[in-house]
Structure formats: structure tokens, C-alpha cells
Amino acid sequence: MNAVDASVHKAARSPTLLAVMLVAVALFLLIAGLGIGSGGWSNVVQAANDPVSQLIVWDIRLPRTLGAWAAGALLALAGAVAQGLFRNPLADPFLLGSASGASLGVALALAFFGVSPMATVWIVRLGLTGAAFLGAVGAVLLTLLLARGVQHTLRLLLSGVVVGVVLGAMGSLVLLIVPEVMQAMQAFLLGSTAFVGWTSGLLMLVVWLVCMVLAWLLSPVLDGLALGEATAQSLGLPLAQMRVALVALIALATATAVAQTGLIAFVGLAAPHLVRSIVKVTHGRLVLLSSLAGGALLMAADLLARLLVAPQELPVGVLTAVLGGSYLIWLMQRSGGASGSTMDGRRS
Amino acid sequence: MSPALSARSLSASLGGVQVLHNIDLDFAAGRWTSILGPNGAGKSTLLKALAGVLPHTGSVALLGQPWHSVPHRMRAQQLAWLGQNEACADDLMVQDVVLLGRLPHQAWLAPPNGRDWAAVERALRFTQSWEWRHRPLGQLSGGERQRVLLARALAVEAKVLLMDEPLTNLDPPHQADWLCVVEALLTHGTTVVSVLHEITIALHAHDVVVMRDGRVCHHGATDLAATHQAISAAFDHRIAIHAVGAQWVALPFVQPNGIPHGN
Image 1 (cartoon, rainbow over the protein chains, first blue to last red):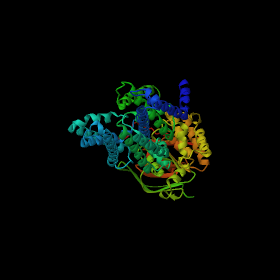
Image 2 (tube, rainbow over the protein chains, first blue to last red):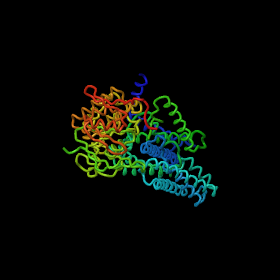
Image 3 (spheres, rainbow over the protein chains, first blue to last red):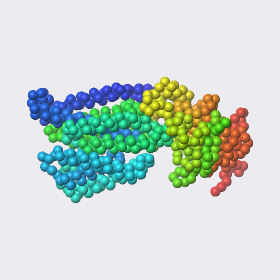
Image 4 (cartoon, rainbow over the protein chains, first blue to last red):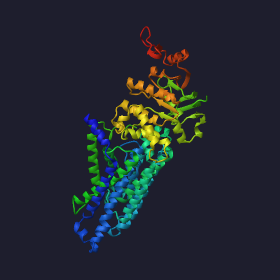
């Protein structure tokens, strides 16, 4: 009986409490993030009367930490929506080929514009952001074209895999032909929050807000889909139109995050699992909580990336892959003994 | 009285193979009709086509109105469908699953009102699953889960209820409980159509539709001898229907030499 009692208790955990905790963690990390860097907290203390310190804290550390939150929130939102739409707990934001599309875009841009010296890094950055965004959106459109629309879930998944593999191969080909871009490309592939300034940070926050409202509006469809497509249809849900909107939502959120921060693995996959292992909620809340969790996760990873080998820093994507990967393995081991509802329970 | 649900030259295909061939059927309002037939006869497909969740040709009329003239939401309020082997919402709580049955009645994104909660509670108590309302569906056994999914379909409180293998994983007491649920629905004037493999349970229905190879071979009242013959014939005369007390019971028919004929 103990197991049952414990599980009843677990299911009754408050989603509101979880949301408050996640926001509190994010705020704590935001403040902690101000003090992490070569000058440490002395920059924060001197910020009031030292213009250099002010610049470091206000224009570099703050937008970067905020940007890490926004990118994590966007990826986790896309992940939660993808897992609901495809009724597959292994779905992640890059499922529709956007990751390889973005890499190909960046590789082509680097190959054509050339690798610039550090002085023009910001201009290049802007061009690369656009290329990554276009690449990601283009890949999703290509996937939709191959799948002949969004109505057939399995065809959509397979097309996503095919597009991912083919565009990935084309990206590698570009690297092979123009090997000079390899190093610049690596930064993108590993994912980094180092270049997020106020503009891109705010852009991500605005897009997140739009996507969040859209996801909230569409959440009853995701709940209905959890009972199967036919049942959702029998409940009178206009699946055809809503699927298009949900795919557009995944594409927009993923492309925006990828364009600003590169390929950050596992946040989109792990954050919804983390939330589901703590509370059982319908999709409206699941998407919001996953976003908050993803934001906090990437922020924490960003801080660790700056701290671990200071004054050097690790690419944040490497950290999220290691942390997220080990978390998923732990979750798998833990749920393997029980009913395993989080990881392996769902059939489609 | 006009039929609650009627089909005219209804045909449907699965994966390029035609599974339903020009079905003409009328389901009388307020009655329970059992659809019987061997595996692959097209029973589930017929139910799906009637529920409008499968592309089909021909026409279906719900409560006297042509299917396509009724908006999705109205249709979903009037007709509920309980499928088999649909994906499981393991990460949703039982009461959230049952609340989904109220979707056709709720304004988009409106929080559930008192009537919705009352319907959810009725449905959960009806299927004896009220105590699990705060547990995730993934933690329930197959039979318990089936009762929750039944509660989801009941929560719609539709005039027409289509059920595909609703007794899957249910033990005999809960099969009997399901009969009580159907009886209660019928007294409220609900039209019930079920696909069942438990022939003895199916013979509690008012009417029986016998299907074979995607066609209807018989449609008649359960008590008629002709209906019993049609059922027996559909199952290659391998079952026999007997009267036990006030019930009809289907038993396997063992041939004298004990060896099945055929190859």
C-alpha cells in the first residue's frame, strides 16, 4: 500500500508550487550570473561608478544570462509541444530537421562570407543568425513538403529524419570543401550563449511570449491527442488546422533559439520529462512549467560553463548534453522498476 | 420514430483494401444494438465510419440530420465514441482524462463549470473509478484504465454512444457492472451501439447486427430464432445459442467427431 500512498501524494504535488520554485531558482541564478566572470563580484560592486564594470555587468553578463533563460524556455516549450503532438516521449524540438537545416545555413554562410577577423565578429554573427533561422525554417518546410502536409504523424517523423540526415550530410560536405570554416562552425554546433546581447535576448523573450500564448490556446488539442487521434477527432477538435499551427509553433520556437545560441542538446527533451516526473498536469500547464524548467536548466548550465574551467569557458551545449543525458538515464533506471509511465509507457 | 443513426451505402477502405461494402443500416433511437461477427468482419471500421473518425463514402445521418450539415462540436455533443487500442494518456490524471469528455460542451479554454464537474463525478462513480481521480492513468491496471476510458465516453452525456470492445480487460463482476451502466443509459433514452466479442453479453441487447466480410448479413431483434441462426452461421456454426433462465447464452458447439473441418 505504501507505494500507492506515495504515488497519490506525488500526483497531488502542486503545479503552482513548482512554478514558483522554478521562477525563484531562475531569479537566484540570474543574480548569481551577474557576479560570474573574470572580474567576479567586484564588477557588480563597482558598477555604479565604474563605466567598464557597468558595461560588463549590464551589457554582457545580464543579457547573456537572460538569453540563456529565454533559449532554454523556447527549446523546452518546443519539446513539450512536440512530445504532445507526436505522442512520443522521445520527440524533441529538432525532430523536424531544423537542427541540420540551421547547421547547413550557418556552414553555407560561413563558406560564402568567409571567416572574418574578430573585429567584424558582430556583423558576421548577425548574418549567421539569419542564416541559421532561414536554414531551420527551410528544413521544416522541406519536411512538410516530403510528408505531404501534417496529417500523417509517422510520415512526418520519417520525413524529419530523412531531411535531418540529408541536410546534415550536405553541411558536412560544405565543411569538407571549405575546411577553414571548421572552427567557427564548431562553436555553432556545440551551442553557446556567449554572444547573446540585449537585442537577441529580448527577441527570444518576445518570441517565447508569443509562442507561450499560442501553445496555451492550442493546449486542449494536445490533451485530446493524448487519448489518440481518432478520439480527439470524435471530441470535435478541428485537428487539421490545429496541427498546422502546432508545427509552425515548434518551428518558430526552435528556429529562434537555434539562430541565437546554436545547437543546444537535450534541454528540449529533458525539461518536459523533469516536469512530468514531478507533477501530472494537462498540457496548458505542462508547456508553461516545461518552459520555466528549461529556462532554469539552461541558465544553470550557462553558469557552470562559465565557472568550471574559468577563466576559460565550456560550450554550454556540451554541458547540457552531459547533464541532460545523465538525467534521462537516471530517470530511465528509476522508472524501469515502477510502472515506467514517464519513459516507456506510451504507445502510439 | 426516426432512427438515431443511419447509414446509406456506407463504404470504407483501410490501406487501399475495401473493408466496408455499401452498408445500409438504421439504429433505432433509445435501443441497444450489438454488432457481432468474426474477426475482420469490419465491425470496428463500421463503428469508426459511423463516428466520423474514418474517411468513408456514402452518407451517415445523426438524429435525422445529414452528418456533414452538423458542425463538429454539435456532432461531438450528440455522439460519443469509445475506441479500442487507442493511445493512452499515461501522464494525465484520471479526472483530467474524464474531463476531456466535456470538451465538446465547453467554450474554448473556458475553465470547467459546475455542470462539467457534475458530469465527470457521475461518470467516475458510475464506473467505480471515483477513488482514482487523482492518480495518473499510467498507474492503473488494464481493466481499471478501461473503466476510466468508459467514464470519459460517458462524461460526454451524448444521445448516441458507440462502444468498441468496451469489456476489454474487464473481469466478470465489472462486465456485469457495464451491463448495469448500459441499462441506466437506455432508461435515459440514450441510443447504444456496441461491438463485443463476449456474445453472451452482446445477447442482452435489443437488436443484433451480424456482419461478415464487410457486409451486414442480418439485422433483427435478439429474441428471434432467425437472429440466432444468423449469428451461428456467421461463426461457421461453431457456436450454439441456448436459453438459460431469462438470458441467452452462447456456447461453443462441439462436433461429434471433435475435429474441426477444413484443412
